[in-house]
Amino acid sequence: SITSIFSFRPLLVLVSVTVMTQCSLPEQEHALSEVAPTRHFGTGEGEPISSRTNSSLKILFLSSDTGGGHRASAESLAVQFQRLFPGTTYDLLDIWSEASCSWPYHTIKDTYAKYSASPWKWRTLYYATDNALYAKFYNAHSCYMNEAKIMEKMEKYNPDVVVSVHPCMNYLPLSATRKISTKLQRYIPFFTVVTDFGSGHVTWFNKEVDKLYLASEQLKGIAQKRAGVPDEKIGLSGLPIRYEFAVQADAMGDRTSERGRVYRAKIREQLNIGANERMILVMGGGEGVGSLSDIVNELYVKLHARKIDAIICVICGRNEKLKDDLETRCWDTVVSRSLRPYMVQRAFDQAALKTANLQPYLIQRALNRVAPKSAKGDDAVDAPLNIDVIPLGFVEQMAEFMVAADVLVTKAGPGTIAEAAAVGLPVMVTSYLPGQEAGNVDIVSNGGFGGFLVDPGAIGQEIAMWLKYPRLLDKMSQNARKVGHPHAAEEIALDIGKMSLERMDRNELRASQNAPLSEHQTKEANHLSEISAPNHGPHDCTSISKRERSFFFQFNAFRQPKYHIV
Image (cartoon, rainbow, N blue to C red; front, side, top):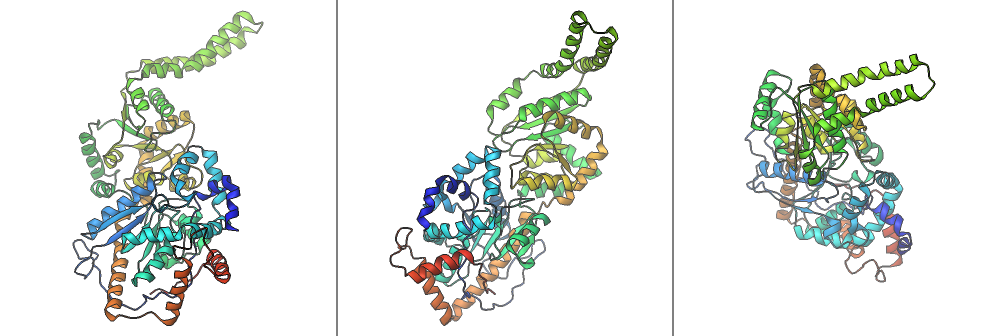
């Protein structure tokens, strides 16, 4: 029985975070399928989007603060909707936290924070749930426990269109949206914008959505293989990023061109950064996590050894301790400590010469082997170089900093990589969250605009080598531009807006004709209403017949129905 799963509480917590809602939808022909007059939308600058007098939309975004990328993508899209469709309003809803959902669904944010802090725990969680078996199980369970609550919550927003930007909000919310459409006698389109770049969890992909927007060919292959999403429902748009990156990308153009160099010099002047020095931008996510301190130390040491003048800007986020530490750190001491392995080896060899019965020429050969390295290190300490480390907290002008930088050092967050690619910035990836961020490393490496290293010393050595060869950086920058899509948010918003306005036209046409539901559709809607009625809660199934309960669990959990929507 469904209640027996609570005897497996630890497993339920694990698998519920990323595979919560794969709720299959009841098979029906939708009532709102009459053909509306064709509308011609403008595509040029300044052209009207629709012939409608009022082209504003009421948008409901579905997301959760499990990482910063989902909310950032929703806000990027919202900006474009309001820019392209004046008068548009939007709301952002976390269905699991705000709809009074049952345990364990309402714990999604806390569980994410706990498990994502431990890579091996997150790896176990992710791969244990990234399969169709668990998805189908939680399909049935989440529908049974929460569908009525979520449907009631979503209906209060009365949206014209629903846009999901979270992997756990593409099945049960879609089912609720379809039932709300039937109840209100107007079709509400449902779209999914995948906010991962190179790989995605199975819960992202539902072939019943009106359209699925993906950032890469890799994701398209996953969507078609795992969910059977047809080509006509897939939009290869790129990842939606902040509007200021599109503005900066258009103004700069190719950063390797003369125009790009002039524009970058202008931006550097605005940021009070020297035009002739190399700039490395180091990030660790919004919380300033990761081994940023060790990475900055090694960058400084390797730049010193190669005699490269540079500025290292470190985005510390909320990590005030790291920011204060970098502001007061003695960099001469950092360089001196990096030479200790050579000094220790030399002291050891000298002691061996005095105490051991070793042949003098062997000892002398060891000393000769260490001496050049020590001398080189001593010279590096005394070299008159100009290397500045600038620690920063949260930065509002991130687009400008990425334009000014020569190299970005960061974790494999999809949004950060997409923003860097949009402005042609080479990337060094230092860490990734197992599962959804693993594919982002491939995007960078296979795209030819960066690399992936974990050891801070190796990171410093590689970055120093990049900066020594400007032609290599130029080639990596050009490769990054091929991957980047600075106008992705605008293109997605325009496409969703056009389809939504067409649906609104059809809804109005149908309402004006007062077209009734067909006999089959009325019977099906009444049956679905009985199954999902609020009084049939998780512990009150007495008024549902045995035949209906059997139909609900077998049909709803193990079938992927087809909608006939025009």
